[in-house]
Length: 141
Image (cartoon, rainbow, N blue to C red; front, top):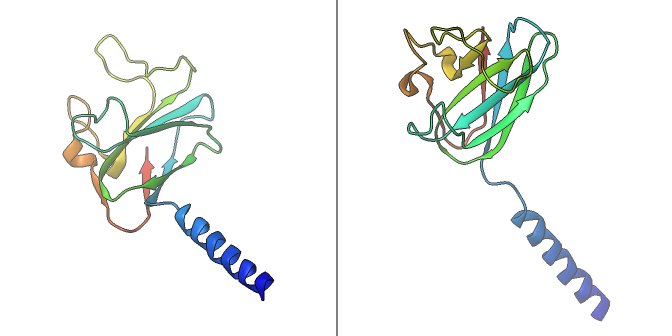
């Protein structure tokens, strides 16, 4: 009987620890299509405030490119309002290159395929909501 009680207690504790380690939040999958080439990397950021948009991201990562596209996953994202931006660092200098007028020379994009007019995309155009469900954002160049 003592062994049975120990096994039962061990099972209950193990089950509690597994449940405690489950992730809180959703997953955002970002698919970027129609890149110019497979050279370089994609620098991508997830933003959780308008003030941080196109600055320091809530979560950021770098991805390889295959078949002129890539897929990135942001895991354990809490419910809220977010936006995504990326640039294709084709020459691998770790920055987005622009011409003398400030116009980007390398591919870039935002969630909802938002594009700026005479400037960068706006938060209002790029934002989306996560509410208890994982989503996929497809950005096509």
